[in-house]
Image 1 (spheres, one colour):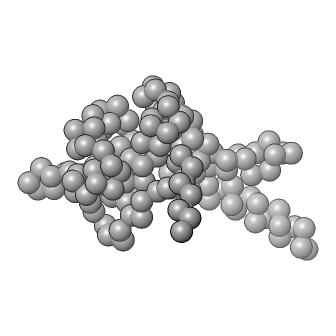
Image 2 (cartoon, one colour):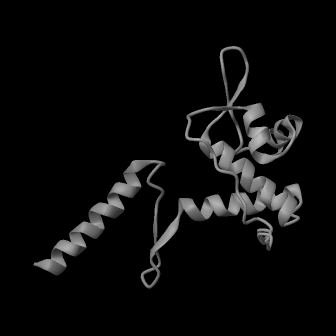
Image 3 (cartoon, one colour):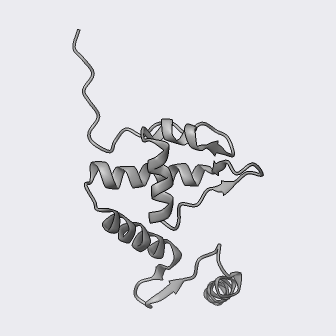
Length: 135
């Protein structure tokens, strides 16, 4: 019986259970790394910051677990240095914060999860332009 082909590097991602919080041991098992590596990554990647329970246990959210898996992919599969992975993640987060809306006009869309004032102003202006086109 032929064996199943191995997934390409970086293709296999463990399925993250559907729950609100994960303890460090769970994240460690999901990512296939030791807990001390996670604690070290917390010092190197500012965006990785689990909450602490009343007893001081680290509680990772789903987005934290996804970030851990992305960091592992960058460091282990793509062979980035920690500094390179940090820069890659920082540049990617800046791209998410400001994406071009209309490349010809050179306008940018502010992040909807940051200050809502500028984002609402952009939406209001674009809706006004649409209304004028429809009139």
